[in-house]
Length: 143
Image 1 (cartoon, rainbow, N blue to C red):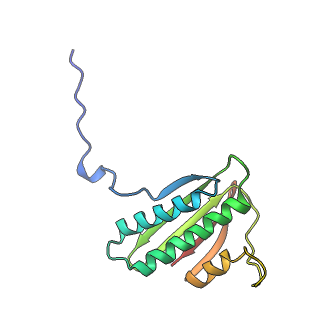
Image 2 (image 1 turned 180 degrees about the horizontal axis):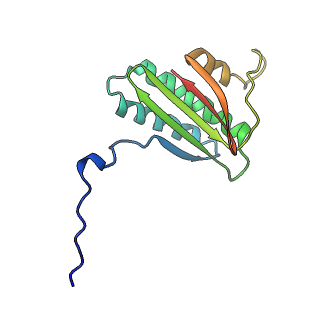
Image 3 (image 1 turned 45 degrees about the horizontal axis):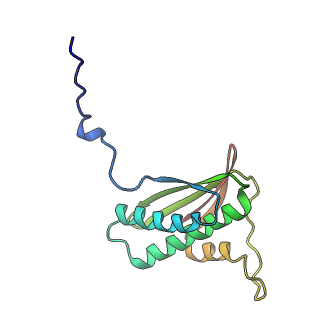
């Protein structure tokens, strides 16, 4: 008996090309750079005529959210998840981490070298927030 040949799935069921909508990253500082690159590739693929200003803003927001998740939401060996959606006129980024502690914007200070990330997100994003998930939280922003 000859084995049955497997046919290719119909065109309607093939996975779409381009970067996936989710990226799992190590809870390491180098992941912030990987997130910036990923966001630029994803948004450019899904919104080909996106402006360079929008790409720069969403990459900066992604970098700030990932940096905060790594710094305040992970322990050694933990991972974070970046989830994106993009369409003309709107890009949404979520950064999931395993910690329930919610981020708090810090007051502005000329003396402190850190603590400006959420202020940057507030200025660039049309909306942003924090939601719980079963094992942790996710911080999201829409531009």
